[in-house]
Length: 238
Ligand code: SF4
Image 1 (cartoon, helix red, strand yellow):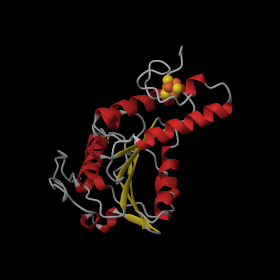
Image 2: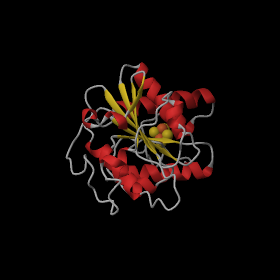
Image 3: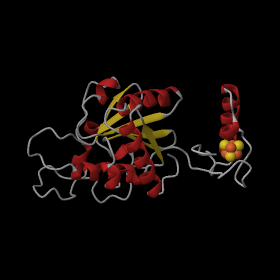
Image 4: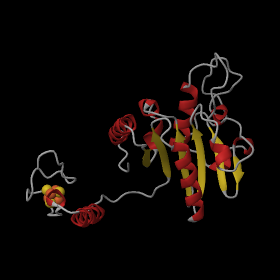
């Protein structure tokens, strides 16, 4: 097969894992399209049963289009009858609320886990230590809404000497893990760029990782790393 890698992992044509899709021996564009279709159908019919999609983390290299993807995905979910809850977990990007058509920036949800008056920043906010919570437990000033879309922001780094982003990452992780979504609700997370959030385990309780890739080598390398880290966390839908 030379440099060709079989998508099903067969080492050679007619190996045990080969389904005779014909991709590695296709010569024309039509043959390649037909072979790809065969592979997709095979993968679909052999996919492991998976839970519903309820927590989607949108990840990727900086500038790949995560925020645009989150915006379009949110509108599509709403259009399909779901109740999207968007969490802006990017500490620096300021544009998501505006793109969603939301004019009021909500208060930073990190305050619900860490009391801003507490100089030590210990976990002492009203949601700190809770095993589970729902959107009903989150005070109105921490949620903005527009046309069926609810929007929350973890917090932003805006001041010099504000400190590191650990508290914000911790709050994002708490929301992903402990927010109990009700029927029809889907949590969509706009993650910070790169792999740091995976290093912190923020996405661990997401059920779906959506990696956005732009056509550059760096973006593809980051996507591969994210994919490996997500699978390593036990997230099966990447
Ligand atoms: S025919 Fe398809 S399944 Fe078989 S080795 Fe080639 S690419 Fe893989």
